[in-house]
Amino acid sequence: MQGERVNQEESVEQMDARFEELCAQVESERERLHVPGAVVGVMFEGEEQIRGFGVTSVDHPLAVDATTLFQIGSITKTFVGTLIMRLVEQSKVALDAPLRTYLPDLRMSGEAVAEQVTLRHLLTHTGGWVGDYFDDCGIGEDALATMVARVADLPQLTPLGEIWSYNNSGFYLAGRVIEVVTGKPFETAMQEMILDPLGMKQSFFFAHDVITRRFAVGHIVKEEKAEIAIPWAIGRAAHPAGGLICTAGDLFRYARFHAGDGTTEDGTRLLTPESLAQMRIPQCAAGASVRSVSPGLLRVGRRRVSWVMAAARTVRSRSLFSLRIAVSRWSS
Image (cartoon, rainbow, N blue to C red):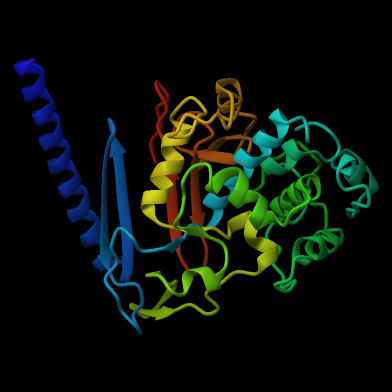
């Protein structure tokens, strides 16, 4: 027993030393790239370490710490995929059923696509129409329905299901499906089905929930000087594609769930192990930097990658969520 305790202490010391090396590198790169603020978290063998760097805003600076809220951008898409899989298990949706099963009035630029497009196409970015479409559809509960109507006018660039091309607008459709089958606004469904069960109490979609807490704003670097990016919030209709705001600690809760057996910390089952495994099976080949895609998530690296890695980049911020499962190996 004494030998095991010594080994554990050595392991903790080694992790601490490696984390300090990582933090030193982060701080060096932050200064070199003129990044005002960042937070880094590492979870390894049950131990978690989080550290903040810099400030939340160049105009109204507060020190970034472990409680600071950040916009996590397209990592939100992984939450959408997780929620969709819950609905699959409840037999409320099927990944390969036509979207018109749930959105009977769905229109796309081509009738054949409107008839055949499925949730699997949306979650794996293989819809083929213009993906980088953003529009202000207001802050009301009809925002997603309005956006879906506008998606109908987006040109089809590649055949449905044949080519991977990052597609934000596909997640507007996925979010609207969630609303229709649950009978609730997208944000409410996400809160009740994912965030609350996982104990993610510092995760939000709306600015009015964030404004009383410590939060980071996005910046743009111009002539080696950081300026605040305006506007801060994205439109409500884009929430399924990238609207979640949370702390690093809450992302750890999410990571522990995906690294586990589908149960929450209190033992409540959200997904079966089979569904979690399905979410890590590559579905299609992608480009040079993104090697393969699975439902709702994508992988970056030299080898085929599993479901639970997502990178996000907007004009405001960059974020990365990565999770190594069992024998899965990847580099980023």
